[in-house]
Length: 120
Image (cartoon, rainbow, N blue to C red; front, side, top):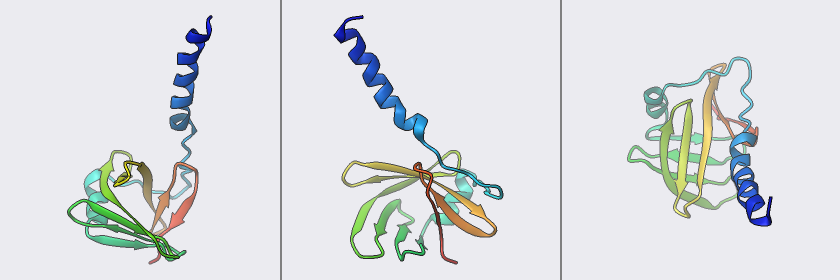
């Protein structure tokens, strides 16, 4: 195989790796939402996390995340199958998190395997 034959194969592996590496680490007791139910749970609401970060899911699809220490990211949110919420930030970056309920509490799961419980 020539260098030019290896390069496309290598690029395909690099591009596919993030999809394979995603690990949302579900736990016993995690309950997924249907699209309509998750949309209704989030639309017009603010989720506050234990680090004081806040995710605002506006009813018109706009989104903003404010860090506990300050600083805000803006974008647009959309619900996807599998209890996922994807945000496309104004920078063009997209992020998808899985939102579940466990023992009556919403929990945000990231593709890196982190779990962020939402304050009651």
